[in-house]
Image 1 (cartoon, rainbow, N blue to C red):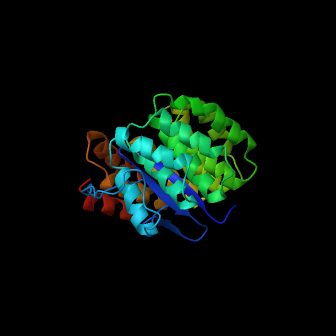
Image 2: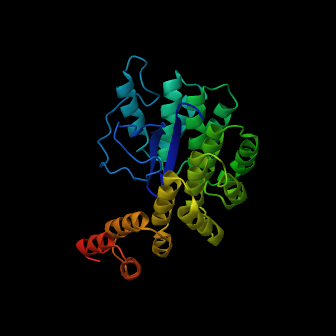
Image 3: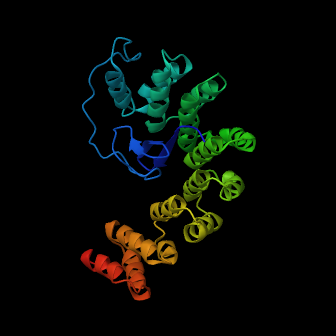
Length: 298
């Protein structure tokens, strides 16, 4: 596959952008992170510094521009969407296109203007890097846009034409960011791909489809897939769905059971997490698992 891939992950309340390479995974803040680790932005909103609303100045450094785009992402859609959409349509540079695409996908309440800008960008000749970002942003925006389902035929067609693992990861992640049920059969097909990255992306995509078939696919891959990357993604996907029973179902060996115990300990307490922790404690023969649960008060 390509040298690296950008993967955007959507959670309620925020978008986390991560860069994947075969040997290293870092966030855009240069911090180590799992490729599909979902984290909502934790920093408190910063005070908006008055900058030119029409766009960042060409004289600004990349860091200053990045900060400007970050501030735009925190504005109301009525203010941010038209400005960012305009930049996506006519970007001053490839950097501006990618930053604007990331920012617009993080603005709450965006709609057709954002979709149209991203769709238009994909009709142009883009670098591999820019296309990754714009594709994934398209899926993220479609998730919340009132008319977001209009991108379904385009993403399904793109999936059908994907002739490399890199392209299949890209479109699968975009479908996952959207989370529309019509993608499931394609996701199920890609879950059998020879590439572990494609299979992991399929598990991520399935997490956002709230059906029993999607859940079964995640659990099946989490138990049976030979790739540690895929199994780890299955754990995170079930955790994001708050499917504690599915997590315990996946605890087939000590390594998996330890990871399940850690997730349960770190999760918000509920009757369900307590009950499933007890079930794990009773079913596991691992003293390490029992110690982890006990230390976490479960």
